[in-house]
Amino acid sequence: MSHAASLNGAGRVLGFGPAAQANRRGRAPAGLIGAAAFAAVLVLLPILVTVVQAAGVSAQGAVDLLMRPLVGRLLVNTVGLVVAASATCAVIGTATAWLVERTDVPGRKVWAVLAVAPLAIPPFISSYAWVSLSNGLQDFGGALLVVTCAYYPLVYLPVAAAMRGLDPGLEETARSLGHGAWGCFFRVVAPQLRPALYGGVLLVALDVLIEFGAFALLRFRTFTTELYAQYRTGLDGPESSVLALVLIALCLICVVGELSMRGRARYARVGSGSRRIAAPVSLGWIRQPALLAFVALTTATIGVPLGMIGYWLMQHAQAATSPVAPSWPALFDATLASVGYGLAGAAAALVLAAPVAYLATRYPSRLSIAVERIAYLAQGVPAIVVALAFISLTVQTIRPLYQSAALLVIAYAILFLPFALVGVRSALAQVQLGLEEAGRSLGLGWFGVTVRVLAPMAGPGVGAGAAMVFVFVATELTATLLLAPIGTRTLATEVWANTTSLAFAAAAPFAAMMLAISLLSTWLLAHRFGAAAFPVRV
Image 1: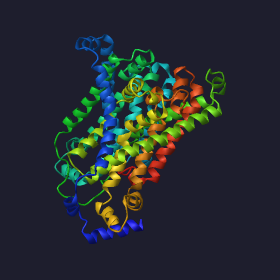
Image 2: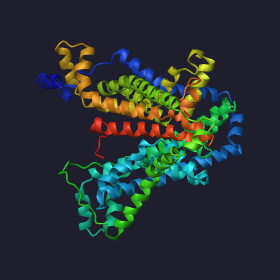
Image 3: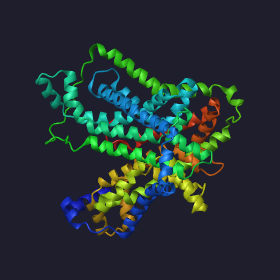
């Protein structure tokens, strides 16, 4: 850090200001462009394979396929659940953010932490808990309950951050003009929250569209579960690719729809002003109902998964009589496999993200923007589409990669590239270009600059991105089920195998271990990397 500080001073002396940096930007090295383009091609590859396979279906055949009653049912289930989940998450997330950030509800700091905690619980673990509690939840209502409990924090986090950044003077001015509390909220606060709210709702919609494990355990049929069923029955082919294209199209519609709703409205203030904390709104008689609502929400999102896992852990007799009874060696092997794939997936995602992030931050151009946007496109490509495309590609063209650990790691890197890219890009953006140039002027090569300049300053952000990818890979189910080498057992696949055979007690140790890894990783992410992991205070 001291070396980086000395380079910072050297940069100021040599005139490495923003204007000078902009004037000296040249053409990006061919190797950097090639590495970034390779990452973009990998993201596009599953989509291109799906399109090529779908092209094997005639126009009339595609129409006949899409006009089947089954497809209509899948469309109604999928779109209906996306709309319902987006609406419920928007309401719950915004209400929770307002109560935590702007009211005098008791225990605000505790509720702020508990409101984020559901993100550490994989949706199919929540589904396992609710299904083992009651089989009556295997319908639309159960699916809506599970995804709402799992994804409402995606709305809460950005909306809470936006509320903290609002100028209290706007509300004070509105009240001085005669607006009450509700009028002030809907006419002044709510419009300022639109970018954060729309962004959160978009994430909810995309996650619901690509979710598989939770819906499969709930026996709720969507496009993802139908694609998996066709693969398992040997019916996956050009017709399945057509259904996959419908799923990709729905994801793109969500992205375009969010951009259209956001529009070109501007929400920034002219001046920075004086940062003040808004005075908490007194809830009055609503305080107790609000407190009870927090308790109910925490019970549904955290209490039920933890409680049901604890309950089934105590059912030793049922676990022992299960056809797939758990054992300590099996638990150890599954844990080792999950951690190993998590580390490998995180490393691979960083390798793909690094050149894209460096190109975007150091050589901004139309090319770098296009490459970066393609990389983020991976967020809207369902894991089952990526897995099925890779299966077809390796069976027909690259057979040595079929059902190999390398192929699974590549799939992880593609699926979670956006999370790694966010961390690496934000970290590199905070390192001045002048520091690197000062290091080179002092005789350091590219490796020395990376180790002695970039690593100390960008390390926390890069580590945060890697930690996020590790959490998602270690708990990933869909791609692991389809692409894992024969005999590979992870914690997620063990939970799946036991739960689908209704062996809830046998699944409990694996679910508990997966939950422990997820919660521990999330805690380390928040406390070890701090602001690099969470740019806004939680």
